[in-house]
Length: 475
Image (cartoon, rainbow, N blue to C red; front, side, top):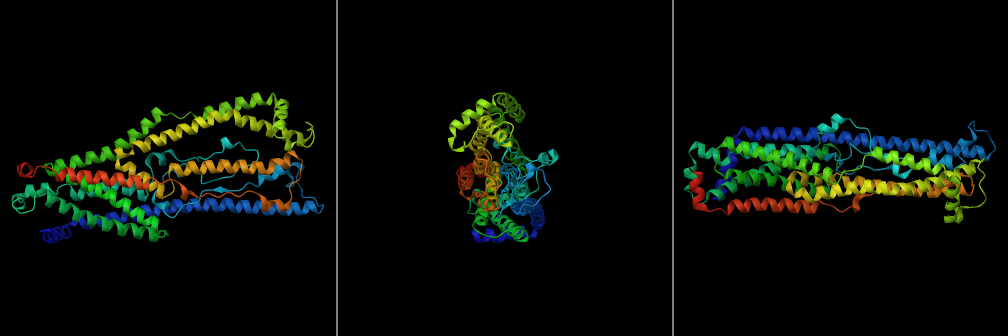
């Protein structure tokens, strides 16, 4: 019976214009979305490369000026701009702390349109005030990005709905359901076979489209690509399982279509929005303006007690004290400046940590409720595989803050001990590197949840009472 059903269904599908339409539409959507995602990645790479070229040019100029200074030549700069001053080099020759895109970054924009992909921590910059967010068009943020993730999460279910909403109802409306019910195979089994055949057809078409999209945009086909296909197949299977359940209700084609579109709105739009809004309501994030105002107030208070602050700082760091600092010299001014910065960071840390903790609680809340919507599970998985997830950018931010402290610790001994910066110290300066491969991945657990939901839908539909079900469907 199964081979006959397969042949019959394949003939029906290939004679139907829907398959050709879906093929052209799916291929067009994937290629256009992949092109958009690739352009976003190219722009990101170009920005990082431009920043690195600027850094290399600044380093070459500083080294040339140091050579001139060592030879006793004039360099035509104010004294405070001489590169042999540690504070000058620490501020004017920062390293580029970059977050390079991954192999699959083109598939999901994720958080990459909201955060900078590189920053330049300086010696006098506050680690808690480093800007990680970039100015982005509010219209673009509202409309989202037309990337492959958008096609898979939002548009693919609509194509599946148009392909499967009337499998059983059309037979009933054409009067052929009685003949099908008289066959040895139950209606549930017959419908399940048709759903499986259509799932295989769509899965194959989708896989071909994704492979073409990746190859045409320079992505390599490796182990991460296999994970991508598995997750996409599971998400596709969920919507086919949902179509199986709706078809089993015995409603008309129009009611099937309305029901499935309603489920699409609920699962893809409404529930994710409610999850996000509830996270904001339960764990509100303090406004950034509050952080700035608190920083200014704390700085004003610290400025009034700089002498006492410096004494306390040098008592805690005796290795940095080589002689008394005269307020009239740049050496003394820098001592007081960095001592006050340490105290400012200490006073601001509770507010900054509270801001970060609220963001982490929001993300944890979203992750805990993501099982309510397969769309959220799918989006989270795609963002992680594309290395554009909130977790990736939060880890990148933490590593940049750590590097900022390393950069500062490299120059501070020279500042406090009044030592010049020399040419050979360029090779000793800290370098930033970020690798997100070690992050815990939600892909496996999200895939298991999708599989369980899909299997649950199929099993619950297949476990219904056979005779009563057939009578109700043929009414």
